[in-house]
Structure formats: C-alpha cells, structure tokens
Image (cartoon, rainbow, N blue to C red):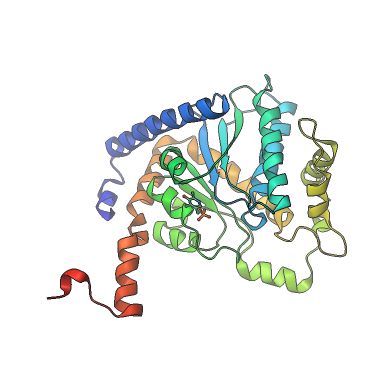
Length: 316
Ligand SMILES: *Cc1c(COP(=O)(O)O)cnc(C)c1O
C-alpha cells in the first residue's frame, strides 16, 4: 500500500480514485433509497458514523451539530454551504434506554430536515437500521468522512476507523483509541482532529465538570431549548436533562465541552472538501498509510512477541 505514496502528486491517479469513490457513492445511494426512500445528493459529502450506539461514542454530538446546521440554513437559506449527507448506522443494546432515545432523536432530525423544501439537497440525514458487516461492505467504500468522535480516553482502539481509512475516508475525530495511530501514520495535514485530549478530560473531571458553564454559548443554549420544545413533534426533554444534569452530574461524556471545537473542525472539513485535488490527495495518503492495521501483521506480531510460536509454513 505504501507504494501508492509515489503517486501522491499525480493528479491522474487521485482523480481516478475520486471516480471510483463516486461509483461507490452511487451504489450506496441506491441502497439508501431502497431501504429508507430518502434521495441523497451524490455530490454532497458522505459523512458516516457507523458503530454501536453508546453515549461515550457521542452520536449525540454529531446529531446536535446537524441540528445546528439546519437552524443556520433555515435562517439564511442562501448562505454559501457545502452540501452534506450525514449517515448513521447503529444498534442499541436491548436494555439501553438512552441509546434508543438517541436513535429516536436522529430519526426525528432526519425526518424534519429531509422533507424541508427550503433546505432541499443541501443537508440530509439518514439512519440505517440493522448495522452489520454486509451493510459496512457497501457503506465504507462510499464514505468520505469517518466520524470517530468518542470522548478522549474512552475508546480502547476502534476498528471501524481503520476500515474507513483503508477505503479513503478522512478521519474526523478526537485523539482517542487508534485515531492516535492513524494520526501518527498520516500526519497532521491528513486528518481532522478536534476536542479535549485525554489528559484534559482527566483534569476537568478532577476539578469538577460543570456543563452549565457552556450555556452562555448561545448556540448551545438554543440547541438545548430545541431538544425540549421538540423535533418532528417529539420532545427530547430527557436528553436535554441528561446534558444539563444536576449536582454536577450532567453530560458525563462532555458533549457540550467539545461542541464548539467539533463545529469548527466540521467547518474546516467543508473548506477542504471544496478543493478536490487537496481532498483526493488526503484520501490517497490515508489509503497508503493503512497497512499498519493489517490483521496479518497483527497476528504475526502476536505470534513473534506474545505467543512465541512459529508460522505453520516455517515448521519443517
Ligand atoms: C467495524 C464494526 C464495528 C466496530 O466499529 P467501531 O467504530 O470500531 O466501534 C461494529 N459493528 C460492525 C458491524 C462493524 O463492521
């Protein structure tokens, strides 16, 4: 894979790469249409967050940001805007009530945004049921942004991040789990990092984290009000309360603390996407740097260093 790096300044190569991505986007758009009846804009950024639904993985941060973009576009429909499609897929554990509420929220946001004629093709949100390998097989080749936004210090490694990287998606994430290794492999210019670092999260917990410190941010207070007043006819007062909390127990995964940083890196992502040559080059560098996550390499290192066993074909 590293041999691909030789072509990192060859416009023909990464233009061809972009053509392949487009074919994969068309195939995936057909799947979306077939399963949800939502028509997505092929020329929009395909921004994917696919993983188990858990509060620490922060699908809620992504959902609140879509709500923010929606409110902005409604206020100013003619503002310059890079069209985007946010795609979620996730299962919630059967007894995990809050996870199911977050799925409900994503579906309500999608319902309201997708049928808004003023917004049109600029912004779409999709929730795909039944996340499984068969779905990942057509979703990951079509992805352009890989959402890896868990609170720093909570994700042991992650493997979805690697699957998306080798398919040329750009990681938009926190310095958590294997995102740290991805960032070392591709360099700061080829990844979109935001948010609190693990040591900063620890320090904040030590000093007491008060989500109320973020309400004076008018964007955040408006989003909380929006959750309470309701989306697509459903109130999400319970999710708002979990963020606000009481007795210093709100927002355990620091969604509000990282919101502004997330909003800014999403803006940067849109800016970079507007320059296809730059974007396609980043994509090529990500594919070329993904070899370190090869499962053959991992097994061979375990064999040599941990298990101290020989390869079968080495046994005479
Ligand atoms: C890769 C994968 C996961 C793990 O995703 P993470 O982003 O690492 O949490 C879970 N479910 C399916 C179906 C996958 O393909």
